[in-house]
Image (cartoon, rainbow, N blue to C red; front, side, top):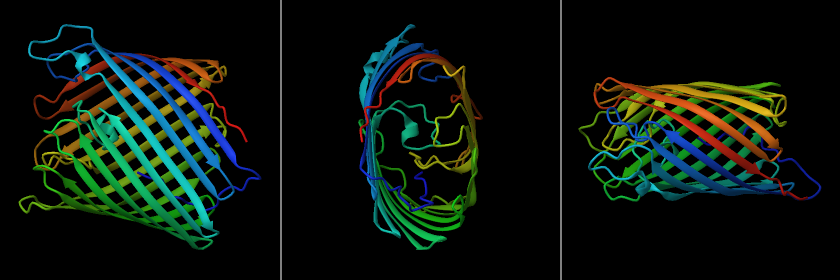
Length: 385
């Protein structure tokens, strides 16, 4: 979801500021149950190389940023391959992740912008934040979002956004999709750090095979509050989804999100300590085969840098997925802990251990997986003014 612009001001600077941050990461990971199977587990190693670059330009009235990462995935079986199954290395691929963000203040009360993102990946979560799919199909997804925000008076602003999303799978048996989404925001700023946002969204999802197209309408009221060390977002609303195939009944959900984020020292400083807690509920967006569920997710992440050199983080979530047209209900758990060492300001080594599990009400969907990871990150700032 695209964050709402709560303040239209763009920081004025005497001269343009350029940012150039080349980066490269190298990761080695072992999954005990790589394919997340209920019965026959396969242990697989993943080797990932990620060169990338962040580019930025900031002027008194405009900001432009571009981030690109190439993801070179290579897999290697560490256990026997069951009869009839392919070697893991047949799924080796070269992925891409690119995001562009531009903002321009046309005049004092008007902000124009555009955002575009492109991913080539096997990760289902890139197409749907609530996805619990375990399929490893390769696909590309592109999202283009022009936007306009206008400030009527110091306390009131209005925003219009349109998002075009296209998802294309490499195999013909998976359904490509096209989404058209309109978004409207009416924002009241009580103070520069407290706002109330009335948000309305309407989108159409078009599948290219047998899954029914649908239209969703969603309205939410969202309170945002920025404190010195913490930021709070609390909102709720209602979504109704209607299907083009008349044999499918409309579905509805009360949607909400409560999120608390904190860091010390406060932003924009680099945090020594941070914590995030979120509780949210909504439908999944993509449901090939008309498989939609109400997702209730709880997220808790925390971290601290000890002795100015040793970052320690814990990431976890728990999600209940209650399917609309079947008796299936899944509970998904994920927890991971990592410890690192800052070799320099621009070079970090870390190790991670994680565990994930699914407990489903239907046979064939349960799994558990333990994984271990070692990673080396290099990010160097070459920015010049």
